[in-house]
Each structure stands twice: as structure tokens, then as C-alpha cells.
Amino acid sequence: MLEEKEKYINPFTDFGFKKLFGTEMNKDLLMDFLNELLHDEGKIVELNYMNPAQLGRSEVDRNAVFDIHCKTEKDEYFIVEMQKVKQDFFKDRSVFYASFPIQDQGLKGDWDYELKAVYTVGVLNFKFNESKSDKNYYHSEVKLMDTKKKTVFYDKLTFIYLEMPKFNKTLDELETRFDKWLYVLKNLHKLQELPQKLQERIFKKIFKVAEIAKLDPAEYAEYKHSQKRLRDLDSAIKTAERKGEKKGEKKGEAKGLAKGKAEGLAEGELKGKIDIAKKMRLKGKDIEEIADMTGLTIEEIKAL
Image 1 (tube, rainbow, N blue to C red):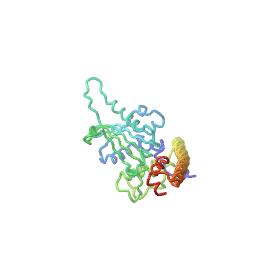
Image 2 (cartoon, rainbow, N blue to C red):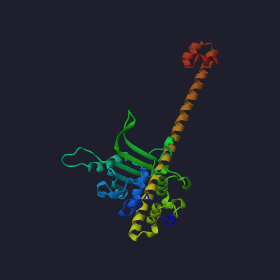
Image 3 (cartoon, rainbow, N blue to C red):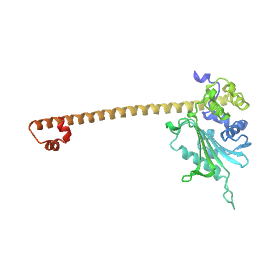
Image 4 (cartoon, rainbow, N blue to C red):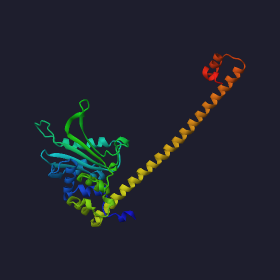
């Protein structure tokens, strides 16, 4: 079976994402990923995981959403999450989660409301939209903006989204370390060995950590359960899409029949008017009178 041939865990399972990014033992992986994402190598020199129960509204959230305090020159906060499927209010969810590290900075007593920067990073296994103009635009960075001046109004709140289905670079097309990170996240579970182009310390560690054969029995059971949830979710989505397509086809057929019927009636009605106009002309009726009776134009009647 396909799942038995997989050598490395799937980062888009709750277990896989937590294994790579949500443990003290592997936090150097997350530090490296965030530094590459921010295009500022060495910016984050230390990070600490905050209270997971605060953000976790469910078991899934506690495995796939991390509240992190990063030691930088300015002491900044990050919400890092993996999201498998599109939600109706996903952007609302992002803003909601970002509010926690903001509120936690509130100080008792006299306080001037100065805040540390907060970043929300979403690794998404879906597309925000399907427009052709941004089909390859997979990296979004959003800040509060003055809509008239087209300038950043507030630079301490940033939302970064990576739409992974839009990232389609091959190994030969990888140019930066960040490209390599995205390639690994998207393709890790499909690979059988570490590619030559990824022979760097950080990627060697990822492949070592992600090896399924090295999971202990409890971890393996958790991974299989997490893998089943992902596959069930994918199956449910594909089923819904197929139902939607069939419904659309039937709706299209119904519209086609209605359109055909309407065109047929219109054509029959026009033929009837023409027959009447011809008979009236044979009887010597005035063209203007014929036009008034049939609704045909004078030009149409003259052409009969």
C-alpha cells in the first residue's frame, strides 16, 4: 500500500507539523524557517513556546497552532499555524489568534500601550482564490494600510500566508534557501531520500527527524491517526467537489433546456408573425398597418 512506502512524515498532518516545528528539541528548525521567511538571517536568536492551551480550541489547534515569543532585537511574538482546508472565516481566525499575544502584553498600572510586534504565519494547504492573475503568487504579506496614501499605517502587526498548492518549483528551479524550505514542506512525504541539492545541516536534520521508521510505537500510532484524519478530510473535500460539479452540470443542462425552449418559442412566434404579414400584404393592406398589427418593422415587412 502507498502509505507503507512512505519513508517520511507528512508535514500537513497535525502530528507531522508539531513534530517538526512544535517541540523544544526541534525549535532550531522553526527558528531557521522563520529567519528565512523574514529574509533576515540571524534575526531570531532564541524562541520560547507560550501556553498552547490559550490558543488551542481543539486538539487539532493545539497540534497545529504555536504561540511563540522570539528573542530578537525588539522581542517579537509569532503565531505559526498549519491549515489544511479553506474555512469560511479563516482571515477572522487569524486576527482572533493574533489578539492573544497583543493582549498578553498589557501591563497593570501605568502603561503607555507600547506593544511588541506580532506576526501571524500561516502555512496553508489551500488557495485563497483561483484567479489567473495570481496563480503563482503564493507568498502574501499583509499589514494595516492607509488606503488613501497606500502606505503602511501600522508595522507591528503582520500576517504572512504561504499558499502551498501554488508553489510548484522543481528541485532544479530552487534558487534560495527559502525555496528549499517550501519544497521540503510540500514534498517531504513523497521523497525516499535527501536530494543532493538539499545537503545542508538544517535539511539533514529535518529528514532525520521525519523518518517514520524511527518513531516510537506511541508516536507511530499518533501519526497514523493524524494521517487518517488528513485522508478522511481530503476524501470529504473531493466528494463535496464532485457533488458540486454534478449539481452544476445538472443546473447547466436545465438552463440549456430552458434556453432552447425559449429560443424555440421565440422562433415559432416570429414565423407566425411573418405568415400573418405575408397574408396581409397579399390582401393589399398598408405596410404601416401590418407593422402595427404584427410588431414587425417596416423594413422586415418590405423584405418579405
